[in-house]
Length: 90
Image (cartoon, rainbow, N blue to C red; front, side, top):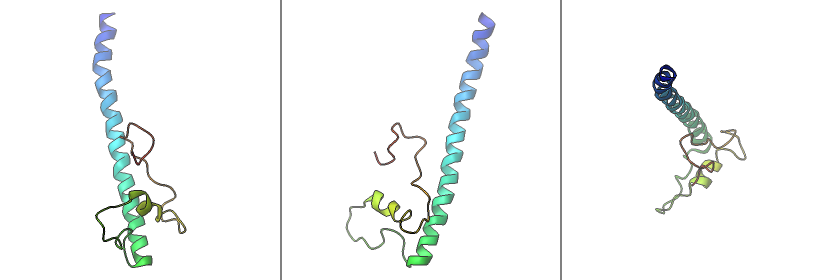
């Protein structure tokens, strides 16, 4: 029984670290996808989303949504794998 407990104590941190590294890789890949989408949008529209706003308030939903409609620079809004809730805007 003690041997199993020792093996579990060794394996659990390695498993959790692997999950964290996987999430970090996902975020890096999503940033590359977002970079390409923003650059494509900028080439087509001659500005980045939100460049036309002079106010201090930035509506992130509206700025990212322009990348998904009407021309799909992104197929969907990319989720945050580190978020506790599933809503990316909370």
